Length: 356
Image (cartoon, rainbow, N blue to C red; front, side, top):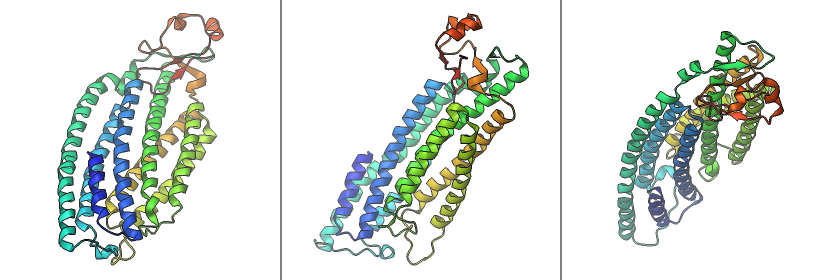
């Protein structure tokens, strides 16, 4: 359905001889459609990852809610595009119509009328699909919920001493790391969506440097790689550096919220037809970054002050691990001679690695 809407929107814009700005508007329309299509594909991969790791179900419900809201906002914004057409004084569109006004208007009206059923169908189908998925996720949550951490039997390595306090600290650490990894997956997508929306900034006359989208995307990739390395190795220095990057990102996104929300010139507003999408993406990304920063600090506290190193100190011996084998029952010396294996807990999103 999104493909059909793109086709008819292209026919609507094709009726005009575009200026640079109207060409930017058509590019924005195509980018927004592409982002929404990718959002649903990415959501499917998130749910598959949720089934593989058997947790984070509640977090991905929030993702579904965000996509439902995003679909509604984008549909409203596209209706504004269709209403504006080629005659918008606020956009200062220089339009040359080759046909007569009557023929042109009939063609535009016909294309817009062809778009409406697809837009209404998307508005209905997306919430219905979300309700079905949410029902399935609620059922899965009863199997994957956080309380299952309490039933795990988590024993320290030979060098440590077992105890209820150690088990409690380890479970808390596992929960923090799992939430952090889930937030990173959401951050990466919304950063990509935000950077993509800034691509036509020069043609749309945004008060944004034309190179900002490239800088945001490259910085996001580097930050994501830094966070991935920090979480895999529990590197405190990398996590502190990543936290500083997140703190700077909050300030930058706050400034952009002000820029997108309050136009400098009311008579010539470059964000008139794109404000809703920009504000929603930026606000969502700001909240996700703040949540990621707080979770990252909790992980740093667990490693630095509580001295809980999942990869070095502990290994999972819970009976619900996917890879539970007879090696769990072998003496410690014999385990050390074997190749290290990874035990994916049914509720621990981070694999607790066995001790070498």
